[in-house]
Length: 295
Image (cartoon, rainbow, N blue to C red; front, top):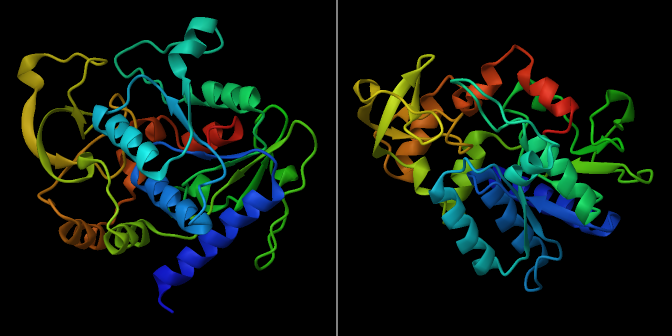
């Protein structure tokens, strides 16, 4: 049995445990490569039956159109129910405050909308595509990560995970974030996408795009951060991670197919999260967002 088969088997086992241990689970779906892999694994876990839980997408209003288009295509293809939580609704209610300034982002505001959506749908488990190799705050995360009744992460609530024993018992009001592909690497994900012939947003492949430099990174030109025309250049770029247009940087690349992307990743010394501008706001930016319920 090769590595990908072992990882697939482990993820499917975890997904089935979630379906068996929780009353109202859901799959957090961003439309990026990791959540697409997770959606495919959920399909495999229950085929030929339908996936027995809904997808939840938190729409910031700053999403790439390519991501939203493929999200809707995949919802139809896999015949799953989709719940969308809108950050703009949270702003309108006054529960989230819009950032201002030249580097304003809605990335952190997703947490408010996510917690509101979890409460509205009464979800007790939310699966996500976070992986331990992405960032140090995620490296120490459990596969079953317990959150308190405020949606926050507290190390004292976390349980030991011995072998394949996963403890989903929670108190009323608590919920669990579950990471079935936690043990995968970025390279594993890409090799699995190639093996399974999965469709992913075109943003991941090199293409010509107007960009501008911000803090040494190539940012996509977008309506949320207007820049002077003399700052804009057209470059061949691709995105290693697909977040919001307002906080996700591109990388210069000529990788137009999966084989070239995989070779490129093998040679890279940088994590894909290095292209997320919000992760650079402080040394512990991701850790701080995790504690309040970001992932």
